[in-house]
Image 1 (tube, rainbow, N blue to C red):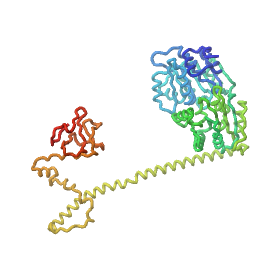
Image 2: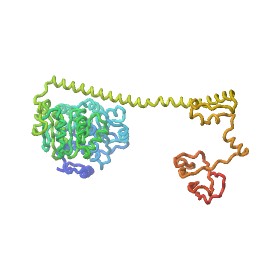
Image 3: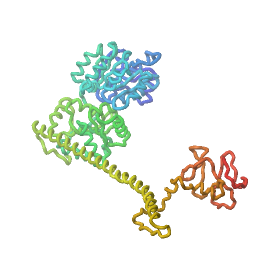
Length: 575
C-alpha cells in the first residue's frame, strides 16, 4: 500500500516524499483511514513504528480541508505529551508534514522561559503540542483557550496516565469541549489505559498492529549477570569495543544517571546525562551532541528519554532492570527502528532477578545470557529485605554526609574569599591618616620657625636635625600657594613682564604626542595615549627652526593645509 491509496492530499504527499517516506507503516495503514473519517482512535504499536505520522498526517489533512479561520487563529488541535523531548519531536514532525499547507504549529513545555511561547500563541496557532504542566500554567494565566478545540491527542498515553500526570491530564480534559475527536496512541496497553479509553473515547476504532508489550524481532537481546558494585566497570569494559558506536544507557534514578556519566567521563569516554532535574537547554544540548555523534554515550532516565527518536542507534543498555515490565519494551525500542538492526544489553543483579523474570513472562522473548566477561557474579542469592533497607539507609546517610561536607567546603571557600577582600581594608584606612599627618607637618614646621625667629637672630639660626621633620614635607610648597597674602605665580609672572599678560609658552611637541582627531567629539583632539586636550585652542608656532620630529597639524579633512603654506606668525590661532 502507498500513501496515495490512503487518500492523502498532494501537498502532504509532496512533503512526505521530500522527507523520504515511501510506504506507510502498519500502524499508519490502520490508523489514518478511521481518523480521516472523524472517529476516535485507540492505537497500540511498538515504539519506533511511526505512531507520530499515524496521527499527524490525518490531523493536518482534516484541518486543511476545513479552511483557515478569519482573524486570530484558535487552537483547533492539541497534542499532549509527557516529556519535553517528545513534544519537540512531535512539533518538528508537524512542521515537516505540513510545510505546504500554511498551517501554524507551536510547542510549549516547562523548563524554559514562557515569553517566546506566549508570543507564538498570540500570533494564532492551529496545532499546539504541549506538556501538561506548562499547558495548565498558561491556561491559568489566560494565554491559552481550548474552546475551539476539534481534535485532542494523548501521545504515549500509558506513560502519561501511569507516571503521575493523571491529575494534570484530567484538568486539561475538563477545559476541552465535550464534542471533539480524541486519539490515544501508546506503545503498551495495560488494563488501566483500556479503562480510561473506554471512558474518554466514543465510537472508537481500536488498532493493534502487534500484541501489547512485544519486542521488535530485529533487536538482539543479551543479559549480563553481575554484582551491583561491578556494573560501571562492566560498562566501561564493553565500551572498549568500537562496535558500540552510539549507546543509550538507562538508569533508574537521576543521581544514578549523573554518577554513571561522571564515571565514564573519568574513564575517557564522551558521555552526558539527561534527566528531569536538568534545564531544557542542557537536555537539548546533550541530545543534540548525541545525535550529531559528538557524544558517544547518553545516560538517561525513563521519563527524560521518553519519545527520543535517534536514527541508527546501535546499542541500548539497561544499567538497572526496570521494575515495570512494559518499561523494558520502551527502553529497547529506542534501537532497531524502521527495520534496522539493534542490540539491547541488560545488567542484572541477584536483587533484580525477580524483575527480570517478569520481563521474560511478559515479552516471551529469547534473551541470550553472556557468561564470559571479566566481572562474573559472585552473589547469587537475593539480599533479604531487611538487609536491603539497611543498605539503602546507609547509602542515604552517606549521601547526606557527602552533601554536608560539600556544603562545609563551600562555606570555607566563601569565608576565605571574604577574608581576602577584607584584608586590605586596614591599609586603605591608614592612607587618610598618613595624608592628614603630611598635611599637618608643614603647619608644625611653620610654627617651629616662628618660635626660632623670636628666639634667635636670622643669621644665627642652627640647622635642626632631619629626623624630627618628615622627608616628604620639606619640598612641598602647597602652603605657599594656599596663603592668600602671598603673590600667586601668574601675578609674579605679570610683574616680571612689566604689568602686561605674558604670552603662553609654546607647546613642546614630541613623537609620542601624535595629535589625532577624536572619534568621540569631532571638534576635539587627542594625544596618542587618548588624553584629550584641555580646551579647543591649539597653540601652533610654525617656527622653521623647530625639530623635524614635530607632527604635522591638520585642522580638518575638508580644508587641509600644509605647514609651509600657512602664514608665518608667532601668535596662536583658533580652528
